[in-house]
Length: 409
Length: 186
Image 1 (cartoon, each protein chain N blue to C red):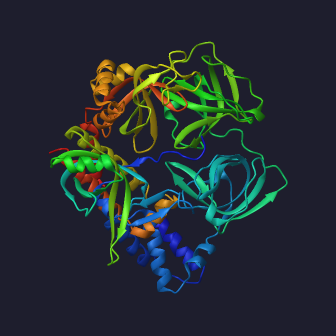
Image 2: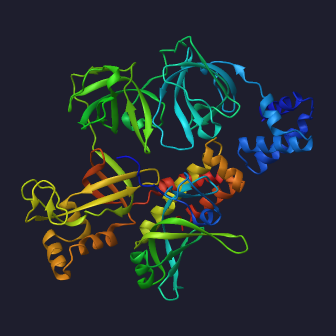
């Protein structure tokens, strides 16, 4: 708290206003201790209070806050103001309209994620170019630092190439431990799938897995890395984690390397636990083409036209754990078990009602709104279910732990 | 596949949902998704909840229009279903109360002539479930709410906006979670 008191005192001093430390401390302490207000909020509230008291514009205060010429390696807390000389290492795909650019910048001392907001209307950064960024602020997110550009930030392109530390903190991780975009990682994994790809700038895209899970990878055409083979295991060095539609993926880049491994990496079936929040059309009682086994739409196969189809039953379920969505494809046997209706029974039920959709209606009524754990093999969109279990145990140890934590807070 | 991705269902307790009154569109055209921002910074386009359906009433004139009240340990949600939500309306019409139900739906807000903002839910589906599922949801909602409360310090744009608008008191919401969790111990 002393640190914040001093900070506030100093920023007012720059404007020629001296406030006794006790006065600042008293207000801050009340907010932090009695009202348990978060530190940033308390700090802002106290600053707002004294700004009003002394008739100071808040902007004036914050502009006076001096950013120092510094390095990425100097970042030790959130709320630091910095001037950096950096190179843009990567720009990440970004679907959030309020963010104009997001990616990774580096200098001699390390690398860090940056965010540039659309509302600040700053010029765009280019990958591979170097810049001086004045007045950026540090921020902590999920235990890692990032820097944000803001409306007071200035961006100046420089012709020299900023040398970037090659000893960026790249950690050996298991796939299940990947927790954040911007992480640099080394992974030993098996190539589970290589997907069809029509994007010319992508050389290969697919799925790699280890004993803790699986993750999508992208290898870019420009990087000239060796091709991967499905089913083979490799050690991947220097991958960077990014996030796309709420899921992590790992990207290979110029600095990455791929070493084939002699031994196969163990893989674990993928698993997802969440509430079933929907069942898609195309579920229930369906007919398949006797030639190619594709599901028929309105009695016709896209390949073989109008055919006499064979009945089948399946569920295309949408699971949702509050953080992300997982589409799950559940085949005939598991579908039969889940709704307690065999394929034959489903066929005669549909015949009685003269309506094939009764089976889908029944699935929706029986299954939606409950929690399930699914294990299976992942594909680009669906998790192909090997087992589907209704979650039936409430973990009381988690409940007790949370109650203990909340009671001491 | 460009463009459409399904929105995740947020977990929010009734008390926090009821305290929410800031809705906005992410984008400029009428097809941009609509969100309700809650005091702890959940950006809600869709909700999943499980609770006790306490009462139902047909408040429609010519067409049936059903209102249901679903309670969780912290308060209650109002659910409205009419001719465009036939399956959900059917459940509200037929279901005997009280009953454990799960609801997947979209938040909606209504401003009264007095300027009060009322929040309610337009259901995509309502299902009858068991007590076990209700207990699982309380823990689920508690975990998500605690996570949001603990992120209140971050500079994330929406969290900042929520704090600015609601002047969010973290202690108030962690107490709410604590009280909800205690229900599981009784």
